[in-house]
Image (cartoon, one colour):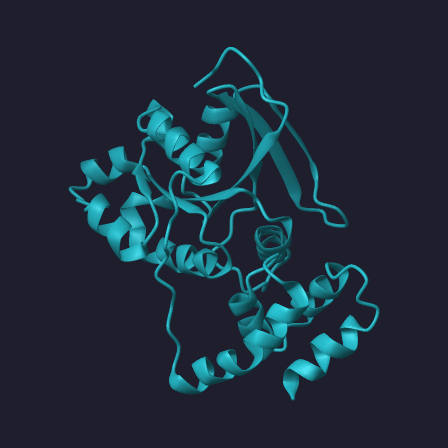
Length: 246
């Protein structure tokens, strides 16, 4: 996974997943000793980052807190969600447990609402094999609309393919087209009504559909974060909190 020459520009990769999926094992296997830890700004939640090199390109891997959801019911969920939306990583890897895939897919679908540049890492494939669990990886990729890579991180199996796939997505050679959750007609109509106004505010910098969903929920954390991310918008509070509700 290492090249001979370093690139000047780092590619940022977010690593997300439920607790106990082997996410930390994936992180350690890719970054080795090239990592450091601290806290997220203003939080007591641990932040771990590490680097690895592939084909001369430096990749900065940001290990997000393990979460079951991105609905910001906890500090960990808030940190993970805000980073995925406002930190704008070049690619997000979502690590899922092959032995309880259905439960883990909830987080995958939520991440896909924020960003299309996603790679799903189905980890613990060795455990699944021991339990006689068979996963159709190709069909899962078709259903999700994003690349899916099977791994057994403890044994190092599948990690080379994961690194290559991440590189292809981050570099634009592979362009995922995720299948998004469709809500009932009333919600979809509301999204269509306010999404164009959000698009005018944020342009292509952020996912306007996801922001529309969060604003429909009157999510105060997202509203506050959005205001901070709108440079030069002195009246953004009025626009975000008022105009979009009209």
